Image 1 (cartoon, one colour):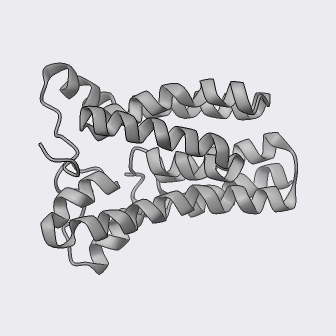
Image 2: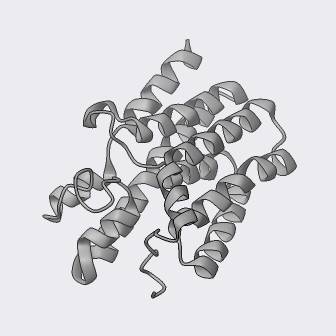
Length: 201
C-alpha cells in the first residue's frame, strides 16, 4: 500500500510549481509564457533582471530542491525499502516535469532531481553539485552543466549506492533530463544557447 500511496503523494508535492508561485509573489511574468517558457530557476533569473532575478531564482531553486528532498526524507522515515524510496523520488520528479496543478507544464527537473538525491545520499548529491558547478563555471551554460551532471548521475549511483531500484531511478532521470533538454541540445549544437548569466558573458 505504501509503495502506491507514497509515490502519489510525492507526485502531488512535486506538482507545486516553485517558479510560478515565486513569480506571482514577486510580480514577475509567468515563467511558463515568458523568456524561455521554462518554469525553472534559470528562466526566473533572467525574468527578474538585476533587481529581483537572483533572489527570485534562489527561492525557486530552493523550492524545487525541497520538492524532491522532503518526500524522499519522509519515505525513508516510514520504510527502508529501496524500491518504495526510488518510486517516491520518481514521483516527485515527474510531478515537477508534469505538474497536475499547472496544466502539466513543468520545468526540466534538475533541481528536483538534486533534491531527491540529497534525500537518498547527501554524499552523491554533493558530488553531483560539484560536477555541475565545475561544468557551469567552465562553460557558462546551465543546460550543458545539467546534461554533464545527468550523465554522471547513474555512474555515481552505481559506484556509491549500488541498489538496483536507485540505479534504475538514476537512469530514468537521466533519460528524462535529456528529453526535457532536447531543445537546449539543439541550440547548443547551433551555438545559439543563452549563457547562464551568473558568471558573465
